Amino acid sequence: MSRNTDYQFVPTDTETVEAQLISLYESITGVTVRPASPEKLIIQFVAAVVIQERAINNRTGNQNIPSRAEGENLDALAELISMAQRPPAQPAVCTERFHISEAQQSAVLIPAGTRVTDSSSTLIWETIADAYVEIGSTYVDVPIRCQTAGVAGNGYAIGQINTFVDLYDYCSECSNTTVSDDGADAASDDEFYALMRASMDAFSTAGAMGSYVYWAKSVSTEIADVVANSPSAGVVKLYALMNDGTLATEETKRAMLAACTDATRRPLTDHVLSADAEQKDYDITFTYYIQSDSEKSAEAIQADVDAAVKQYTAWQCAKFGRDINPDKLREYLAGVGIKRIVLTAPEFTVLHTGTELDEETHLAKYTPQVAKVGKISVTNGGYEDE
Image 1 (cartoon, rainbow, N blue to C red):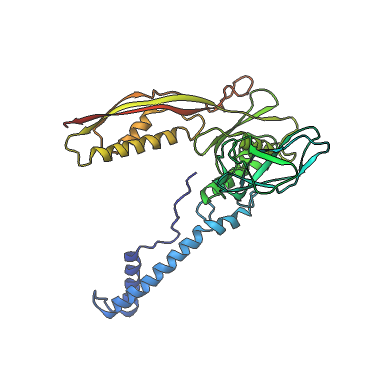
Image 2: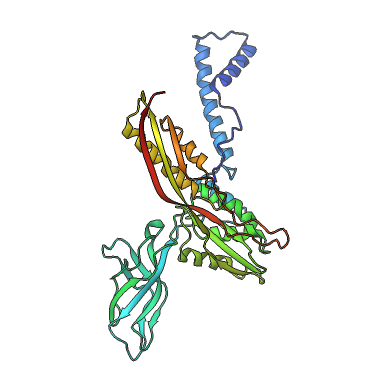
């Protein structure tokens, strides 16, 4: 959510302030102020001081408005509502499988805080609690978290975290069995303000849609969009979309469920589940033509066209239920310096938000949908006269 621009409590136009001071001086002294007179220089100096003070006043006023406040000032305003603290950076998590050389006659302890890393020792991970390899078994799956909070720990592939930092009895090998995820940077001012607005829905524990959306989004600043709907009586399904347009991973879905099924938040009659939205595939195919007297080179235009396509694909998958709209692609391409395009794909396609309700049952009619780009084919058709 984009926040408002600064509000002008008092005007800061230099000419207006100078005119007011000159008029006031002339009315008091009866002396006409000339352009090069000493009085004019003094008035200009005073006007500069007044403008500076007005700018400070405007700044102070804006820092008392949540939609414009920044940093610690926004944090202080958050104390007045239910969301009293900016969401901090969160470490990435995943599941690690720890092996022992052979099954033992007694359980083998893997202490909390046992550390592992990848082959390059880029980041260090640690177990969250004590775990045991049971009698007769040769491995145990243990949750681990990254010691470095933020998005840096996200995206480690299965098997990539495979190096011991700390050893335990009979240890032989280790590797992660899930892709690391759920790491998030501290909320920016824009993200924090959006959560503050959404937190108004959290006052109710009646299972309102906005309440579920707020608590689900609060687990990570990497979540771009959340839909909560009820496909059947007593059932609530949560769907999440990440900032990069991908569906939420298992780690993120588990975190959302934990946040939304807390005994102080979930109505007793609600059975809360997490689910994946439906992805609607679309292709991009078009040919563009360059005007023969264009001042831009073909290489520069090609780069701008590629950037416009990338911008469009990011926009298209940034929200549930956003219709696949070829006119938006035309809009992004309009300013790159090409003469015209012949667009054959995508075709306009209506997507479901997941919040549409059946008129009789008032239950959700559809699973939310999100666009997913497939094949991209962009052809330079060459030059054309105007």
